[in-house]
Length: 317
Image (tube, rainbow, N blue to C red; front, side, top):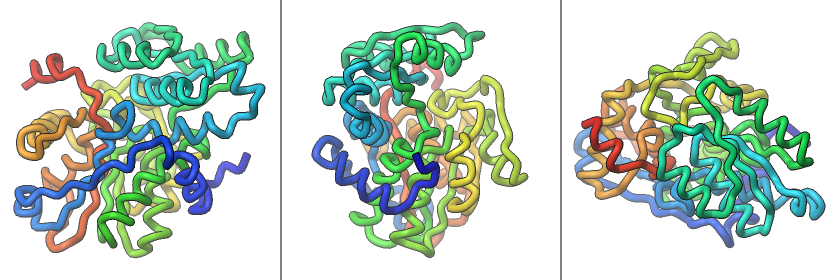
């Protein structure tokens, strides 16, 4: 398996997933354009099947397993969106799925993952989810599907930027949320092929800034259990596949605080009438909080997901 991900891989992934994934809408907002001084195009992966971009990579990965591996099934570890994505892809492809999830994952994500037919294995705060998943994989001969550090996952996620640029036209800036770097690296590969002059910028929560520090120091950095409401970006580090892709194709990294993130998320709810989860609002937050100069530019913003416990998150306001 080639760890490098190319434009051809993203094109092939798009052909594979197009009959099953939604081509999510690209929305604009006069209010956002006025506030930022830019022409902004939001790629709404919060409206993707299972509510996040993760379906793209999960379906691309599971669909390429051989018949024997599909019959045996797969195991994945996730805080929620990758869990739901693998569970749904498994249901569509008739592949048995086991998901290792934190016991304190948002209720909406736990219920949705069960609803798609997956077997759940819950773990506590002090448990190593990756080691638990590897043990289950070994004991039950299941294929491990990691949340981001896999070329088929990265290629699938890159299809979101492919669609955005095809639908919105050329961009000068592309802002993408970053956890483990699967979405960011895949989108960066796609953007640089379709729109070589486009600057690709990843956005992380300030409490989980490992990718930003990695980018600035050119040395892989880690973070342990970051305390952030952006639960989809609590990864400990970029991966063996995503780190070199980020270093090669991404132009800059930015961070936003949880307070800024909540403010931007509620803005999107109230002004654009779209439900976006905290992690999903990372890229939009960098723009709305003016973390970069976007005046006069054509800007793409990835809204990566909308799986949020509305009652719980509203209590933080």
